[in-house]
Image 1 (tube, rainbow, N blue to C red):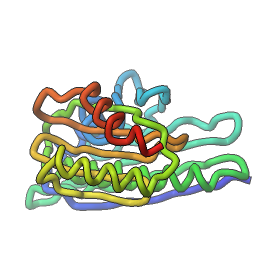
Image 2: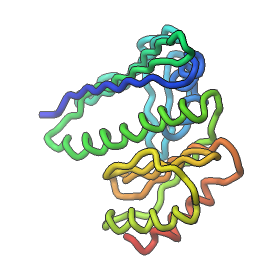
Image 3: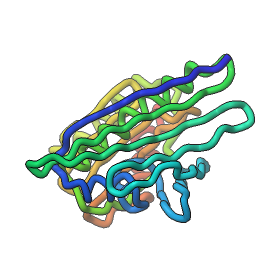
Image 4: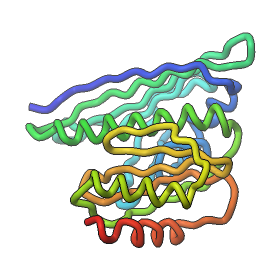
Length: 227
């Protein structure tokens, strides 16, 4: 059966066309808001996020206005594409439009689509947050896979309480049933409900020396009893 999808997001941000293009079409830029580590070279976009390591072909490249890349159609019909359109405004801001489209195969597509949609909302909001507060800067992506969770309501409550101390004064910029995004002067801190059960931390740090090991310890200690 399967399910085709397409979604569009559009926003005006207080960043230059050049800064927006850098964010969406270069490896260091994508590192600063999406997930994992990214490379844009030789007509491809490569992502490394744990064991998830897809390669997309660039199908539109018109700097600094139009960028598109996609996974190609897999044997089972699975497909995803990301398209970005960038338009400058006279007063120095930029309009960014993003279209996400694709196809999920099988009769059990609904859970995967929900997870992808809720995760995608976090990534878009992080990009918007980045272009408002950190344009032109490059983050260190920190990716940690924490404990497996069975009671997510309890896990989110416990995490909220611990983060109130660890990230005191942080601004919450996004929350939905599967994700949480917080911003400080140092960076953007994100937590995701992993599709196969773990709590995932996927942060973007612009200053300071905190490490993936630091956050691994935090998640293991905080959520180790919330399985």
